[in-house]
Length: 278
Length: 296
Image (cartoon, each protein chain N blue to C red):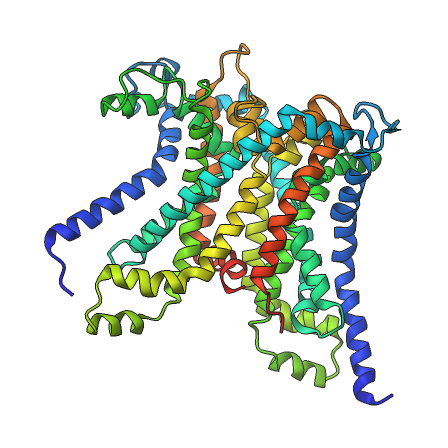
């Protein structure tokens, strides 16, 4: 079907509109982060920094403990991801390959944990963390984050394992390999793309988490990036350091966007695996 | 016992062994805290004293909850937030999915751009928008005044009539692309032949949408809807960052945390948490039933 030229024009205008809508807030954060205080608090608003400068990015690290927050976030999200992948992959193997009584019950139980509202365990989790002596440590967050990363990891990996043909494993069993060996030597290499997808999604979830991080940390010992960005304060209580907040926002968002660009195909398939195929 | 069934027994044992670490971890971080929260909801107990000194009050916390105006306000705010944001996200998401599903140059770029709002941490996007909404220096006021849509700057987050709609707009921005991606996956599973055949039969684009696209998209649409509803019902980050614990916008989760942490009321806060849990459990049950997971 041939479309008239004005239809095409309209279509591309619509696309441009959607694109601007999606990207503009990020663009605005970048522009604001490059402005001087004079430019930032200027009316009417300037849509382009006249004298772009990096000072705000330096200030984030010298006037705020942002380096420490980044370290905390990286370690917490990294450990959470690693642990979820290790114990999640054996569980996914059991659920994806073995037949046994009670399997459906277990699967539904794990799935329903992933739908728990975090707030419904907040009080109990707080008591647990205090009694384990983990309050205001990385481990408090790693432990708490397992409640959403682990079920999600198991879910993604299980659907991945079910797509892998069984022949190789059967050959290994015939050769006398144990189930643990089959998982480690035969299946894990084949699962690599699934592990990357699940790991990436778990990392992003843990990196972005706010409620637990806000509640289980008290100072910069373990405070993660989202909490730091939410609580950034300036010279006075009424004066928020907006340029620094925007600089910090750009710093944490850029790596995420790069990851998304590299792995977009996998991320989309991982996210839709559960939701659409179902 | 035959060799076959002995093998089956061994396989079952192996399976449970493989499941064990995950089950233990989930018992510790999910079942135990949930049980503990449930238990605490029958006590009056302060979060500030460790070890805890709980005092049994029976159902008092729940009686108080039912009479607590702030609980009902937060429930109403959450309901408004959920209904409006989910409807807008679904309609806009469907629109964007239909547009992006067409063949055009630069489609890859578009799909990537769609992941940007999703990848930005909620707290960060809330701060970005809070700056954009600034009543004096904000770009939102500037744009709307340039377009002559408003005659004077508005205090988006301070005005009680505008605060919740402003927050909903942020959530819509953040989540619509994700919705669109889910629906796009659904659209792409519809075979082209159906459209080709109906075009031959002389169906209009509109007819095709109502009689082919929408019915075949229904499963994906339903799942995406419930998925988003569950998410919206527990909203915390965006509201907490943008307006704190202000009652005009406070959600159920914000209220529960305020009771638990800011007021230190571990007992009463836990009963608020259980109220939220019950409401969401009803929706989650509907989700599980509609999903019917295939395992083998």
